[in-house]
Image (tube, rainbow, N blue to C red; front, side):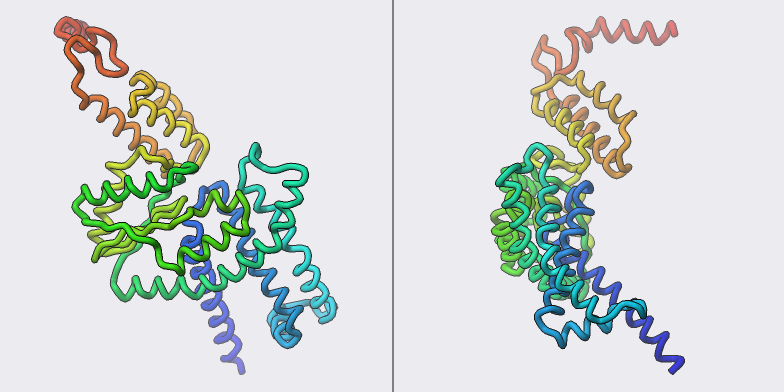
Length: 353
């Protein structure tokens, strides 16, 4: 008996880790890697829906409820009837709360008011039910797909993106062209129904806040040694180590400016807007000085800072590589800045200290 308790505790921890990992895979498969500002909120929505499903099962099926109650460590003074009552309350109250939380996926200016607000709260009932069933299903499907990757001895990688409204098709085309140019011979196809159908169900009941996160069609780019799934907030890459490394390098080096951000913070995205304007000729190269000032003062995750710095260097490289027309300066340059007289003047100033 003394050996059984530690064994059960170990099994409990192991199962908990497996379920946590599977839940993480399922969330990535459904939403991709969402912006950092919305990750906690999505976790609350997902966990709340699972809790609602457990409470509903406990209320609808007393035998199953008894089993669930037996799994919940409760103090001696808490009676079984109270736990059942708590399950009933959760089954009724959780969906509206989830409906309220889902509204916060929208920007403050886009959140509805009045009748729209009431509708968003009541939408929590169908949304919670669909999300719970979808997540429960994905928790089964995700480990199976992960096992498939392991058996093929493939590696996984992710490139964080935030696709702009209406930009999913363009991003898919840009990724496809980038990988083709890198010699990976990729082909575009629809995502498997097990990935696409849950997204459609969520979009059907989740309202505008969820439709913004879920595309109408989910694309997968495939070759014999690579699979790239395009989520609105993530580019999920699976394949051989060589193919994954080449695809990540190509996306990072050749596709910095598409209809998506490579950072998730508002500050980072503002800098990306400036860099995109310079790269497209809508702003002068002199704007890079403002970018440098922001980079020196921004408080953002270091990974995002490195992304912005890489994009800044890519824009500068692009500007320096453009051939200026005779007598015309390149973007951000003043007339005569690179002429022979200017060059001699700079050399003289350097020699004189």
